[in-house]
Image 1 (cartoon, rainbow, N blue to C red):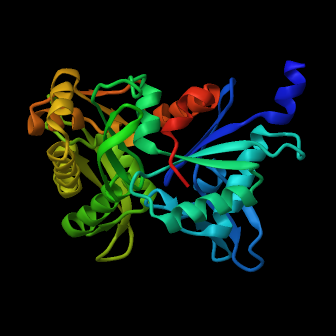
Image 2: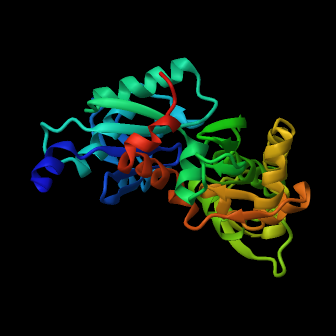
Length: 339
């Protein structure tokens, strides 16, 4: 009977991110980790590829291939393409076409009513029976294992592809929060601009991300790193490669990193004194892909004089936390956003 019930009622949690989408199946764990990318034929708008295979086409397709990222700044930017992508990912985990699962979707804490409606509509059109929304920092806190229902102040910074979410959580709700649309994508854009300005080198989005991951840092390193950045020379138009160091990239991304630090300060300024005391004792937790930027924790420690730690497996904290709500819906449903 348990198997029969699961066959028809496998509810899922979706971390619908600007850069990546993760799906957690109730009581079973994470089943999908794919880039939020769709490749279409420009002529008939038919889908060519979705997820990792579509991302491989970014910057490399011919004129009839359009590669789209339907998410921007943590919310849906292209309704139709987002619906196609969500449906494709749902079908990877829900094999029975008659099964319309209950779905919880993670959204930025600063999401507008209009953006909520678009996310709900797209998810319902993709096959959901019921759609619930949860704020990303709340989900991240649950994923880390913080006592979100207790009268204790917990501070989480979730840095994704499109947004940075900073929240102080207590008694099952967000007490103070700051949401800025500066995150991983803006770091990539800053690297692209830096290479063009300093080296007359035009690089693509994927190369910028590669540079960020391999040599990017927010704080001086004991041993600076270097790599070759490859692109097109803006002067003579031929392929070119230049060596860049972690010090170069630290300079390149200094402005968006400063914006994140400023947002953290703003959230701390809005925090009630009693909860601020808890944060002083318990520290700040970094989650999301941006938490993997070298030295970001050290930078925040220096700027705030507070303990800062990077969560274990920061990329999956949000979807794991949302999965906990699915697994214990009766007790944790109070942390969901109101319609």
